Length: 555
Image (tube, rainbow, N blue to C red; front, side, top):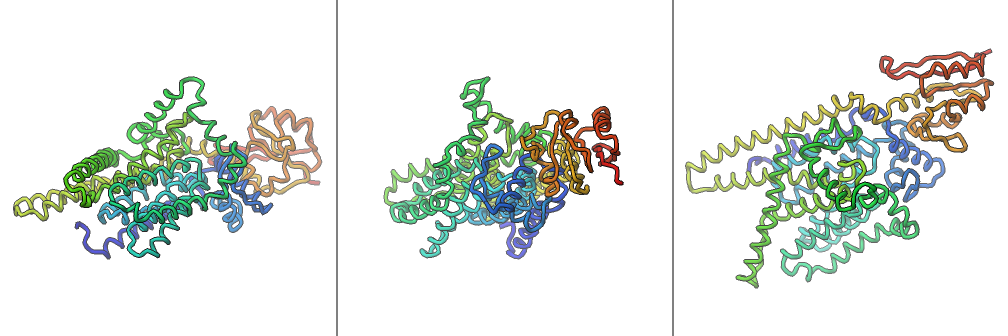
């Protein structure tokens, strides 16, 4: 074993986990540099839940969203007030719990200590996972639930104590059932457990026959945990299907569903090696989902996993013909390979069945645990070769071969580490300071919300929006959700108007008018309407973002 001392291993894993958790919380209040519409909507729902005490299973607005994430956000808003930090702290927490769960899962898969360290390191520094651990989208909970459900299931299967085994099955089932409260893509995740269960029952002779009761217990626990929202969906079936239907390959007007599926599948697979998600909120400059230094690991890991699965199935069939009464033991990489491949293909389904904005790294976020298990399988294979050389009776091979292998392993480890550090640099420097990122996270509207939050409230307060802004009938709310969230609670005192509508409807008595767009002609029209007002200019980011505010003259 390359890492022999437990103290060194535990010290390194603590350092890696600490670094990963630190990256998920560091500068969370300023990076990403704004608040995107969907994030803001989640925050507004959380604020409303706090105001009304109605914490919902499902929020129907904004195409519909499972409510658990918003309800947790509501707790942090109640504790820390309205800010982008309180909006996103839940995501940083889910991402951090995923890192910890991934460590325990890799250990339960009986992988080497070096592979565990490298796997957790890759996940900790992955731009893909880091990004969604710092934005207020509920999807980040999907990989968290998958890793913890699998960990406790494996823990139950490996447990010799029957009472403890039932406890682990209970926790695993509860985790799996809880997944339906997270994000729409999780709905296919039970297939992972079905595939793994079939593989396990096939290779562990008579296991299912002897343990059918615990499997029923596991399934019943999952269903019982999911029952409240399942009942909700039974009575509100449109909420279950509406978002999926909106982006489905079956709703593509330009190409047939089969062509749309193949196109989406190819786009999502090539996202790992060629062009990644084009959305600047999800990615930087269309980079692949994993860095160049890790691509060979993923490709080789996929080949190794496929080889392990096929070889073990063939060997079992041959073994059964010769030794029908004996038990065939699969190789040590068989179950990790089954789990990795199952996660990869099952959690690719939500992406492959959608045609909007492809490749879409958020919809396939559940693939993350499988991808990084595949990435460390090549290291396991190399270590397997190393052990054979180390235990060889050929002294020359033992000495020369092990030294070369160790040098090779060290080189690969350096590549993995360097690529991981570069991912952190891309996120916190290149991506965070890119103008496309600022635009994607509605930086201008975020600053407008901060401005409103800082302004005194007048008797009559107005926001003059852009022409294409949607305004509700009561004029108390609009499509400027970023402004509404960050400017809470002062935003309650404002009315929204389109530019020309406002001229005919505003009251000039003790008025304050904030303009979304910088338009001199428009401000002149309002000055003619209310001649007693003066104009203040507010500039942000060295003049990149400018707002004008008209105020009634104080007597």
